[in-house]
Length: 296
Ligand SMILES: [Zn+2]
Image 1 (cartoon, rainbow, N blue to C red):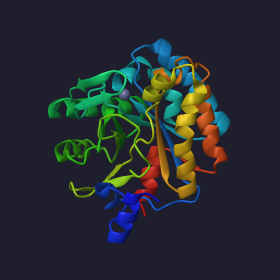
Image 2 (image 1 turned 90 degrees about the vertical axis):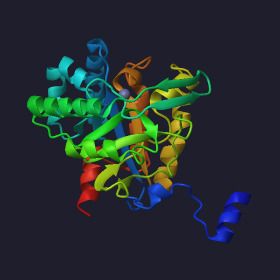
Image 3 (image 1 turned 90 degrees about the horizontal axis):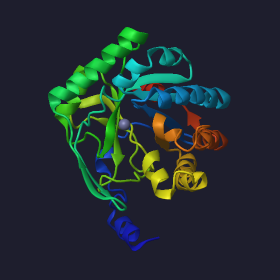
Image 4 (image 1 turned 60 degrees about the vertical axis):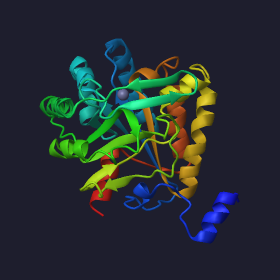
């Protein structure tokens, strides 16, 4: 036991610092935890996206683990027919990642290797246009009503400080977001204590935030080396094991271009799917996860 924990326990203060999360926490602990995987499908190169789509179908059908695609509209426009089989596939769920990968919020990344880097968020008008165009495309092309969105880059604290963006997303039909994917340095990892929660204090009690946990794949693969598969798994499995042990939700983020980089067979991703199954975790799509909480 650490000194800090002892002091908190003595004073009766919760040992977590995530009040904004815990006040409107969405899910009760579940036996063996819950595993969610979302692919940000965003490449502008069809020679990247199409081999990814072929392989991702194989590994999910082989393992029976469901998945969500968070699609950039521009990537859908380049791969309309290739994405069609996923629109009605029982293991897949299509949501969005804006049209042109416009950030919802600025991020100022404190990367221990590359230093400080700033990326500017879009305007409110841009955000509305980006979200609407992508939802329209998914509806027109596949008959899909888009209800979920992952924010490009993701952010520290998600959208808890941006009721104006939440208002736009609400008006555009978005009911769940995956936007908390960075820590206080706009870096990673994000700890499992940041569990899914409702944006109730901001006035949107029916909008669910499902954060990203651990490392976004690009950051960790770059850190350990793109060909170091075991290094990546060693940095990811402990989050899954803790989630399974404590009945928590583990939400994993990977991409079309990074899951296949130096790993065209997607061995890393398949290992993660198989680990989730071996741990007895409940596996589902983000849409199904949201729907199950919505009707409770
Ligand atoms: Zn992205």
